[in-house]
Amino acid sequence: MFKLKNLSVFAAVLFLGLSSCSKDNDDTQEVAAPVEGTWQFTKEGTITNNQEIINDYQHTTGCTKDYLEIFPANIIKDHYFDNPNCQETIDTGAWTRNNNALTFVYQNGTTVNAEIMQLTNTTLKLKFVLSGNTNLVVLTRL
Image (cartoon, rainbow, N blue to C red):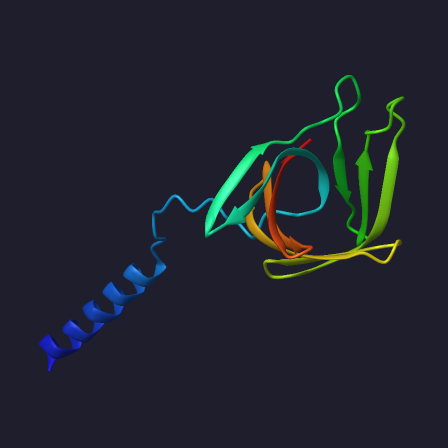
């Protein structure tokens, strides 16, 4: 009886110890990081035949770099500087998050449903479908 009881306690401790260990992997997705903040566009691309094709984001030369603001009050503002005189265009809307899904609803009626592929304190990588194409964008926190 004593040995069986010790074996049961040992098995329970072993089970708890193993189940509390975190798995070491290189997956950088951390859903605990906040999505709120100011994010600069750094990369963009597509997924074709299950393969990512991603390039540097093309900011307008000589202008402020495009960026995205995600506010805690579920407000989003996209800042673009692509006019000939580097005038700023701001697209405003609302955002919601449900686990790894982000939905942006802009005042012009456009809705973007994005999947968070990576979220750390410094990087936000999103996947979304527009006009039948699967797009990627990588942003860096400012």
